[in-house]
Image 1 (spheres, rainbow, N blue to C red):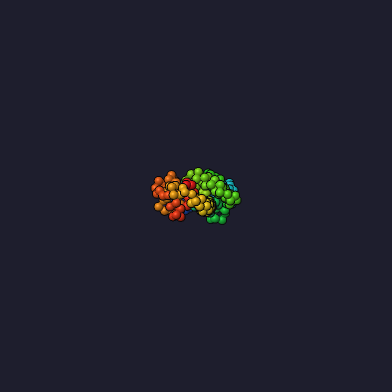
Image 2 (cartoon, rainbow, N blue to C red):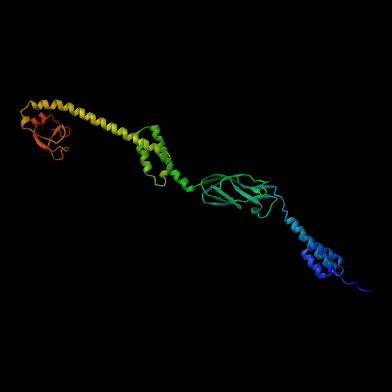
Length: 289
């Protein structure tokens, strides 16, 4: 019996090459080739279908049915990080590659790859979605508080309350108490006293009232001195002592003084009382000559 020569596609090396570069054709030729053992064919076929199933299933992962974040609210200090576990249904490994992470305000918090990072004071919401955004998780409210700044606010609060009380009491001592409390604050706390304008306005009002009271006292004193001056000289003029009594006058003014009067500052000019009266001078109310 004459053995027919093998065709090129029946050669073993061709089948092996086709199994590598174009597996379905190589597999069909392998089963038609009677020179290969059946056990080898079964093993190669099993490997082929195993690899095919793996790539088919792996390239089409189970669809995400739900996404859940384990919090309703979170409070953080500034410049802190927190790991947030994301629960998926069905459960999948490496959840960070299966979902997108979102923050409603990234100037306050950032949410990336299961990590929450606080940036500045404020409130924002975070959530996660599937890659196609068809499934969305629950939203979590995140509040960021600057704990150091909050401690300073607590120090400023009693001063703010004292300044607020100025309106209620209307007393001068409440202004001085509030000012004293404000001055006792450190320089980094003072800017947190939000109603400092009320204290400044109250101080200005007290200063005006004090000035007006002082002017009233001076006016009353001057009036009393004038009334005294109209009576006292008349008694002196009737005596002989006015010619011999020496008093002192300044270069300016309308009063005559004792030599030791502090208003003269040691620069008074000696003159007889009669001449002082003749010049229209009246007695000083401070030294009472």
